[in-house]
Image 1 (cartoon, rainbow, N blue to C red):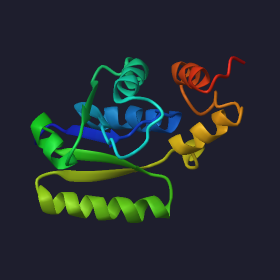
Image 2 (cartoon, rainbow, N blue to C red; image 1 turned 30 degrees about the horizontal axis):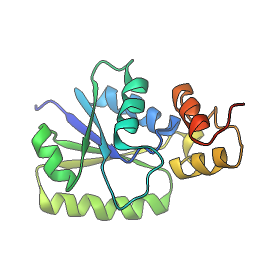
Image 3 (cartoon, rainbow, N blue to C red; image 1 turned 135 degrees about the horizontal axis):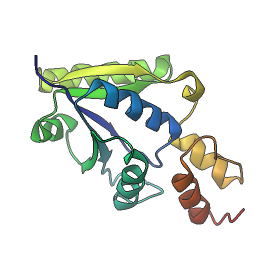
Image 4 (cartoon, rainbow, N blue to C red; image 1 turned 90 degrees about the vertical axis):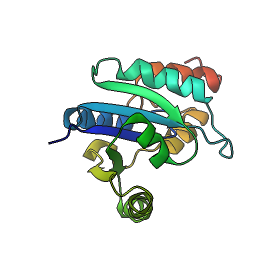
Length: 163
């Protein structure tokens, strides 16, 4: 039986407690879990790729088998270059499943040896997205229960919130 090397890709702009929950659960499934931050210049990100990598590295430190990288281009090519045999994706709602199914089938067509596994979002995080976190903090709301403390601090600085 082959060991599982998984890739958990995303923009992580910013990383949320929902992402962290998937990372914790994925780290129990995979021998190695690579959290892969997407470089996508066409998307207007709040944090630079370097800042996102730094934040992710900070919050995954407790997981000995989790590493952080970044990629651009096809995920399947990055996975092959890193020796991964599994793509890990989270599903919050039916709408996520429809999109993720299309991506999984395309990835399978491009690299049949690369499997995709879906983990259901933890109940407490089924509504949570990076987009919503940014919206709440931009309007002065409290996001402390949605993101790790280091991320909350960065968000407050970015949005000029000191309280």
